[in-house]
Length: 90
Image (cartoon, rainbow, N blue to C red):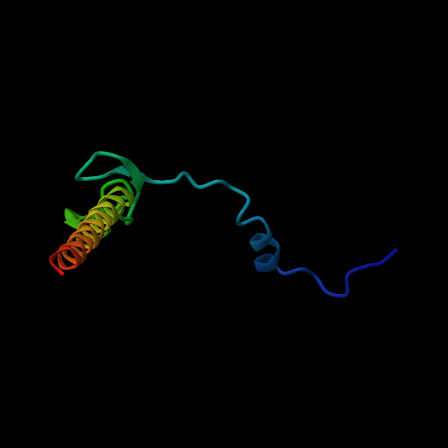
């Protein structure tokens, strides 16, 4: 039967079980919207961290994209109307 060549040190033995316990996660509330989140993290719901806006949220990005699309469509429509007006005047 195999036998260890050297004695396992106390440090090595004790490190083996150092991660076996479960640490409770610290949870705080967002200062802006009161959503639950971990400590030292920006809120993914509203984008605030320590009372300052640091992230753009998914909803804000979607609204901005919608506004850009509407502006682009309005620009294309105006361009088509200008093109039609020049053809009619000929």
